[in-house]
Image 1: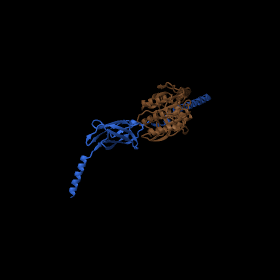
Image 2: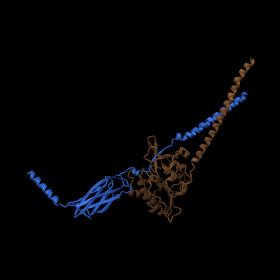
Image 3: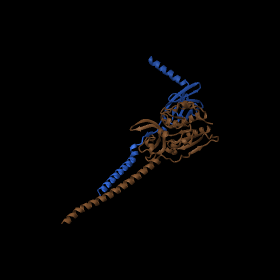
Image 4: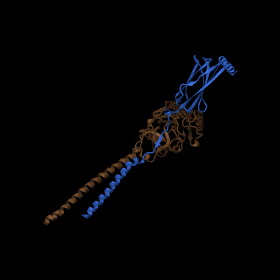
Length: 172
Length: 300
C-alpha cells in the first residue's frame, strides 16, 4: 500500500514539473572578491521552461554590507537570454560583503535569485597617514658636545700654559 | 778634578732646561692648534645654526588656474604632497573646477615643492583657502609602541642633521615615514604644531584650511596653531583615511561649500550623507572650531 502511494506521489510530482511554467534566472559575479577601486562584473541568464528568453527586462540591485541599495539597474536579456553589468562602486563604498539581487517576470511568472561578493581593501588603497619619530637628540647634539669639549680643553690648556709661564718668570 | 765635577753638575742642568724649552714649544704649538681648531669649529657651527633655518624663496606654483571672471581677492592653494605617492589628476581637475566656478584663482603646488621652507612662508602668501592634500599622522613612535601627538604634516624634504637644527631641537620638526615602513625607507621632515605656532612667517588671512591627510583633527593641537596664526577654520579627518575616500569626500565637500554655498556644518553633513565614513577606518571629516559651524565661505 505504502509503495503504491509513493509511486503515485512521484508520478504526480513528475507530471506537475513537466507541465508547470518554470522561469529560471541565474546570477554570478566574475570574481568572488574585488579590491577597492576595481570594476565588478555581474552576469547571468534567463530561461523559461529551459529555453532562453530574449529581450526581457531584468531588475538588478546591489546592496552594501548595511543593506543599502548602492546600484539599481534595469537590464535587457540578449539573444541567448544572457545579461551582464560592469560597474564601479563609489570611492566611499564600504568594505565587506555585497549582495546582488536579480528578478525578472515573463508570461506572468516571476523569478528571483541572488549572489554575493566581497569588497576588500588591500595595500593598493592605502591610507594617507604615516608615522612620526622624534629626532635622536644625542646624535643631533654630538657635534656640539664635541665643540664644547674642544673649547674646554683649549681653555684649560691655556690656563695651564699661562700659569706655567708665570711660574717660570717668577723663578727667573 | 774640581772643574770636571762642576761640568758634570752643569751638564744635566743645561739639558733639563733645553728639554723644558722644547716641551714649552710643543705645548705652545698644541695650544695654538687647539685654539685655532676650536675657533674654526665654533665659527662653522654658528654658521650652520644661523643658516639652517633660512629657506630658499617661496616656489612658484606648479600650475596656476585663473578663471575669466576671477575675483582678485579670492585665492586658493592646493598643496599636493600626495602627488608623490598617490597622484590623482581627477581630483585636481574637480577641485580646481569647483574653486574656479566660485571665482577663485587656484595655485597648484606639486609634491616636490612641499618643503619645510614652503610651510614656513605659506601664511604670507595670502590665500583664503588652502587645501593640504598631504600625508599626515599623529602617531608618534616611541620604542615599539605609538603615542598620540600633534598631527604632523609631511614635507617632501629628506631629513638632514645639519638643516633646521634649532627646529629639530624644539621638536617643531619631527621625522616622518610613510607606512608600511620598510628597512632603509627615507625619513622626511614633518611639520608639528610647534612649527606652525613658532616658526612660520606672517599670518594667515582668515584662511579656511582643509587637511585631507590622516588624523588632521584627531586632536586640535595643529588646528589651534593654525587658528593662532590667523586661520578662520580647519576641516580634517578624525582618524585615518584612505586616499580614495579623502579625494572623493573633499571633492564633494568643496562643491557644497563653494558652489552651493552651504555653511561648513551643513556641507559636511551632506557630504557624509552622500559618501559615508571611511570604509576602512570609519573616520569622518569634521571641522574646528565649533564657532565656525555656520560660516559660509566667500565666493563670487
